[in-house]
Amino acid sequence: MKRRHLLLVCVACALLGGCQTKKDVPPVLTVSAAECIATPVLDSSVPMTFDGKKKSTQSLEISASSSCLTDTQGRRRLFRLLRLPGGDIPYTVSVASLAHGYTVFAPHFMLLNARGETVREIDPQTLMFRSGSLTGIFRPRAGERYLLIVSNPDAVGKRFSRTVENMTATMVAAGGAFFHIYSGDDTTNSFVYSHAGEIVITVYPVPTS
Amino acid sequence: MSVILRVATLWLVLMVVSGCATPPAIPFDRASAGDIKTIGILAPAFPERPTAFVAASPGQSFGLIGALIDAGIQANQEKRLNAALDSQQFVADPVFTDSLAEAAKAQGYAVTPIHVDRVKKDRFLEQYPPIDETKVDAYLDVIFVNYGYMAAGMADSSPFRPWITMRCQLVRASDSTVLMQDAVNYNPLGRVGQNGTTVTLSPDPTFAFSNMETLESSPARAAEGLQVALGKVAAAVGTLLR
Image 1 (cartoon, rainbow over the protein chains, first blue to last red):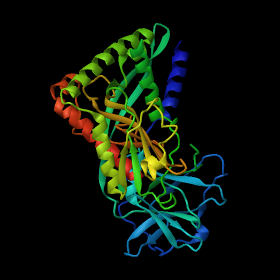
Image 2 (image 1 turned 45 degrees about the vertical axis):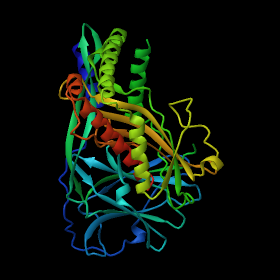
Image 3 (image 1 turned 180 degrees about the horizontal axis):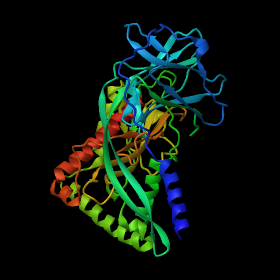
Image 4 (image 1 turned 60 degrees about the vertical axis):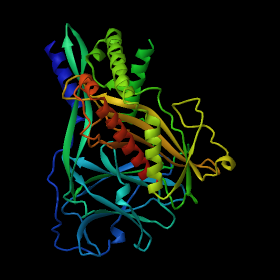
């Protein structure tokens, strides 16, 4: 019986492990890189994968040691450059900034042409929280070849709070049987925008409704 | 029995909106959508009445008997919520439609309200009105899956807050192409940090009622809370139309 309980605890821990929130990390509020460049090097771009049919997802980290860009106002911003999938099949790109504890990467998205010139900026006002991650969704247009994800100094350091309803199920053993006890709570957390964080990029075909 | 069915449906809705079953969003690309100047706002589909829902209740652990108890509790709470809102003559449809029209106008569109008879209130229209009758460039079709108040649990620490689950799509009038499709959830159930497709709006903290008695004692605030929530959802749809 003890072995059975131990097994149950292990299973519960494994399940709960998947539900853990990401470890808290301090926000990066200033970019201290020794050197920043004015334009990203196209050859250093990370290819985005998409076979034209199935949704593909990739995760990227922007850390204090990531490449740094100086914008036209002289502000330092951390960035990652991605190469958009080629091909003629229309697709949608979703870029989500995930919360790491109470820190959220403040993103700004720009689309560049084959020469690395900015041809479109995704209006930061259009970014919305989707299931808890600050997300931008867009459809690349003809001539757009690269996605530049850069930190947004206008937002870095700003705080915001979000409330979510949570529901948890706890497995309980009684009289040789196991059943779930459900409970709910209400959590309000305060977050701060950072130059660094984790982003998840999802590419999927344009749905046909 | 219909109450049990309703509880089961709400549970299903919760699983869908908080999990992975939401269909992928279709973002609106204004530049490539054609010349969309006038949007016809179709009369939204609303459930017959607002819902009062407790996401986690003790009865869920006890099978059919627990479900029957939960269904009874929910029916009672819903009755009390509806009585409170009725006392304020609160009607969600015009509140939302007016806010949505303002949100669309703020994005530079002209709007035309369009009355439609919906046979199925849980899905988008299968056929849109003829363009020569409505003279609009696109139709904005909105379905409310649920609206009302939700509490995460029975304790006072998980208060009733306004709760809305809706879906929307923008359809080009000339050829019925779906230009935008999305879902918005006000007061989401789920943890922060999840990656998903549904737009999630954090509830306004000023409208929280520790239990149904508190809500009943402030019916004007309860109606105002729902009005604010509907306005925020409408504003979110406006953002999706940028």
